[in-house]
Length: 343
Image (tube, one colour):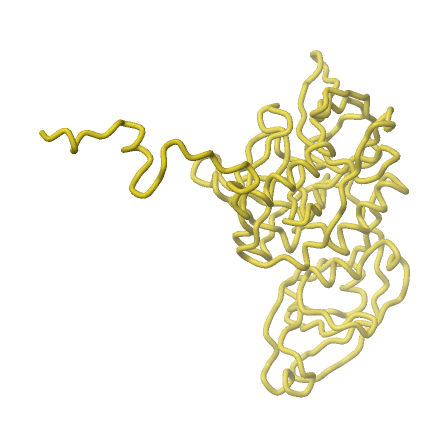
């Protein structure tokens, strides 16, 4: 071997055209756009995310549990998942800076899987900014911040892998489907529940709530969206400690309109009534299975999320006009919703 063929190992590792003794680029130069967004979001949101610990009294001692929560108001209100604080009244919240405070449960709504707790000492809390999941797009970068397995301040990143998902919830004897759930491949694990799902601008667009499947679904996380409907739920929990909902007594789902009716109305979808509960507000008003609900109080509806949005607490006891397509004819019926009872 000729002497000219022998090269120092550092020159080999440097690669062709590179000087092994050249200065290393600064961190700002080396940080790619993706990393820059994730680190910026983490720095902004992590101080607002708490590690929640609660204890539930039982006949034989107490049951300890917990999850994550995100501060949403400077006076100590923390948003989390209802199943994180289920049947608990008090607990504690610890933050990445080492501070800790007691908490009390303000209100929990199992039908949306959202809850609000309040810190006893809010002096040092940093509220996060709430965004709007209605503006999300599939493929968009999102960051999950929480406390999986109790590891505080854990950040994972991924994309919105699907929109418009749904999952069933239950409170007492009542079941409900949460609509417009966000699906993400950002890694979620036990303890992430109640934590923040954040967009690239650092706005909280969802509350992480579940992982699909115990093993095979680790890349499928679900988050309750922050939107107009859930903002009203959060406000009700803060102001009243509970969510008041109207009850109609029907089950349904979206359905394409017949072509003639779609052309006349200039729209494509409505809500098909699948089942009507006997002696319910819907039944007493004369609504039948296979009816197509076109509008409620003059506002067009296309899916169950529209129905749930309009049938909030303000609709209880108020006679409301439902515009319905039945056997090719458009008719109007008046329904007086009752209050939904979950016990």
